[in-house]
Amino acid sequence: MDDTIKGYPDPEMITVTDERLIPVVAALTNLTESWKTQLSKGAVSLPMAVQIGKKLSHERQQALLEFWEDARLPDKYMSRALHAFAGNMPEWAVHQVIRIFRLTEKIRASMIMLNDLMDRFDELYERFEHEFWEGEWSGAEEELEPYLDRLEAEFQELHRQASDEKKSYNRHYGDSSSDSARDSARTAGPSRGPVPFSTVIGAADDASPKELKQRYRTLMKKLHPDHGGSAYLFDWVKQAHDNYMHGKSSL
Image (cartoon, rainbow, N blue to C red; front, side, top):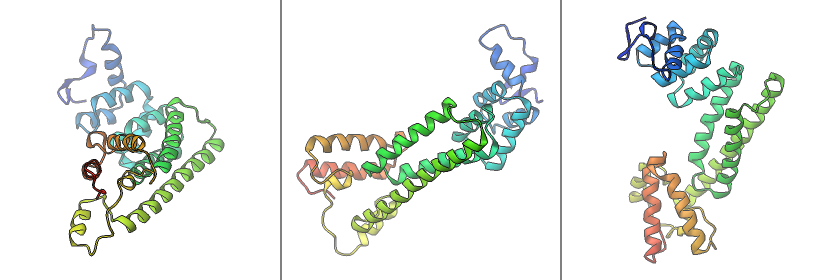
């Protein structure tokens, strides 16, 4: 192993006196040479390397490495894959779990303004994530496989419904999800008329001012760029709110 890992001394050459560091050094020492190489290249973060060395045997570390390289796994999914491998989840199931997590991101983006679907999605996602992290799934493959298939099918159905709703919305009001929407809006034909503020934020037409305010605040939190939302949609909805507050129809 190189003498340093991204500027850190080789853990095997360190004499540790601080009890808080002993588990960290032990975990790094337990890394396979392949993972040490990935760490030295900066391909994996030091905190993640510590978790890999702490939670996995050398055999499982090699399996995770092969999975990581084969799936081209982004950093944000690495902790989930590690958790699954630490729980001895079959590799096919880990692939499916990661696929479901990726699907949930697409769904969340598709239904950001669809109240009913978003509520159903949140409920299903919270259950999925809780059961995954808490290890509440059956370890028997004959039970795990149909469960994951059913779960993925539920998410796929939500994704289909969200896509259909979004297409319907765009047919009526135009696609506001990208910069191209601004360009097309400038060159579009006759306007279809102003879009009500309640429609923009996905509230009922007869929603009370209090309900509109609550829905607006909830939506703006989800759309805020600091929370992974869309800067354009954030500004778009804010403009609709400003127009609404000044007595204009909306957009």
